[in-house]
Each structure stands twice: as structure tokens, then as C-alpha cells.
Image 1 (tube, rainbow, N blue to C red):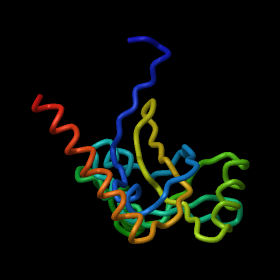
Image 2 (cartoon, helix red, strand yellow):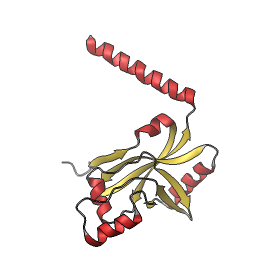
Image 3 (cartoon, rainbow, N blue to C red):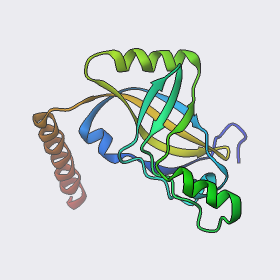
Length: 160
């Protein structure tokens, strides 16, 4: 394997985000996890379906992301995870400039910061945070129509 290639293993993705939101600028953030949580993430037990990001006191926090307690953890680590909860707030590691850009984007009308994808990069958990604007119902219908047309074209080409 070439040393310049980075091995990235996607562990969770928020597929609804592209359907419900118009995705804008995105940022890569590290995530602060407790002991057994990283093992649970590596096992693919993470869910970003309702996850979003808030900026408080110049820090970014991941809210409502589901990371279950690791099945094989015992003792203190398991007790700590059970008391804190699987949907607890987790700190995101971003540069000051990125946090400022996120805060400014969220303060604009209609924008929110959502988690779109989680992956492992060099053994560390990373989250992709995107600035997004909610889609209207007619935009969603256009997205569905475009996707169906693309599928029909691919089916027709495949039959040839």
C-alpha cells in the first residue's frame, strides 16, 4: 500500500440529510469519545439520523448522535457509559476558524449545522459537519423525479 493513501472506513452516514437539506460547505471534525464508545463506533454501531451541531462558548457540540455502549465492556467503563447515556452531547474538535465559520453560517437565516457522515481515519473517529438549508416540499419532489429519471436511464442503457 502506498503511504500517501489514507484508509477511510465509513461507519455511519446520514442519508436523509441530502434529501431533507440543501448541503453547503462541509467541515471535517474529530469527536471526543469515552473508552468503550470508540469500539462501538468501530463495530459500526453509530447512528447520525437526527444528529446536529451546536456552537456554545466557542466550542462545537454534537447533539443527538446515537453511539451505543460497547457490548463487551465491563466495570467502570460500562457503568460510566450507562449513566451518561447513548445520546449524550459530545465535543467536536475543530479549528477556531472553522468554528467561527460554522457559527456565522448558523446565525444566517435558515441554516443549520448537521452531521452527514462518520468515518475512521488512521484509527480516529471523524465526523463531517455540513452547513445546510432545509428544502421545501417541491424541492424534495424534484429530487425524487431526478433520481427516478437517472435510474430509468441507467436501466435503459443496461438493457442495450
